[in-house]
Image (cartoon, rainbow, N blue to C red; front, side, top):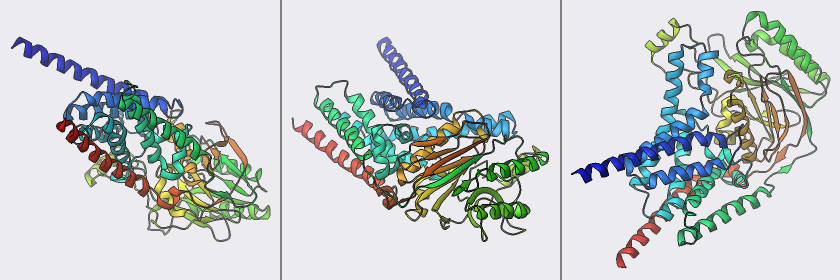
Length: 511
């Protein structure tokens, strides 16, 4: 009896150690992403999580996965508290509740992954580490990108943007990079016994993945259409707590007019999300003056502004290309609890009593044309939308360049703007096109078709970025097939791994 009690205590202690290891691995994974950029941490941390799963049954494995997810998202998205509490002026309790709710929801994906991995996807250690678990991980990230509107932040592939594995992005997208990174993690774990059959297979997988990724990085999937165009990105650095104050309206309009006037003659001048602190119809005279000045100097202006299509209609968060007939793009993918509030009526009444912003913005149409300028067709996105790579494909390959207007002032001096810039860089790699990223307080950037930063602004300073950028033609494999290819690949890996595992089981029984 005492022996059974001691064994149970030892087992409980081992489980706690593995839970703690998973939690630490999740927190450490944040270091792999911007602004820390320690890309090597991601596969090592996932290898640690896999190690915890190997010694656990399905339910404890789910708890270990949940611990990993909590560490990753608590460390990686703590800035949601800043936007809700500091700038949204919500009560601290509500801000903490919403932040932890997001963390728990995201961690649930890793809990489910842990359960599935140990319940159905563990026929043999090597097969599971190299095929089954990486494929399941990739499918979990893909599901996280669209279920309940999606939240693809901190997908592992972003952390590998500056490694050879990024070569898979134009072919399989960010989730393909995630798949390669997680397969690398499984291989790292199997290298504990380098001379075993599994260890030799792991070395071969690492060589194929990293060598193949390096080779793919040298492939030019798209071509320059013509001579480069000159662009200027204007960063007004209007702090979020003052952006919509009435007394700041005229100073803001004067600032942007002065900054734009200094750039006239450049091909494209881009201003940030909601740069003009008025509804579009109320700023008509100001916008007409900007458009006329730009035309006289051979320039075109692209800017973010809120607009109402009709007097009794919703307000849209929009991008406008100024001209005799303005071209307009309305934001399609809104931010939950930022731009719309998925709560019942009685909760809205409570939010009204707390003086919280609760009016939903309008949702742009699913099918909108590219923004056509005289020098380039632009694939538009507004702020958070650029986290959804497959949605950008609606404008490709027609568009020769990506444009994103953002306002990361909501997150203060946190890691969020750096993570967001990393996401924008990945979109350029996937599409094989440059990105023009104009933000309110930074980080504004001009990104080339390989994801390289051609110009970058300081944060919280008035700044204008100037660069000459190539318009690209052609289509990467990801532009042609989207996530269909990588999802199909993951399903093939699961089928092949399951079949291989069954063969090994049968072979073992015969022996």
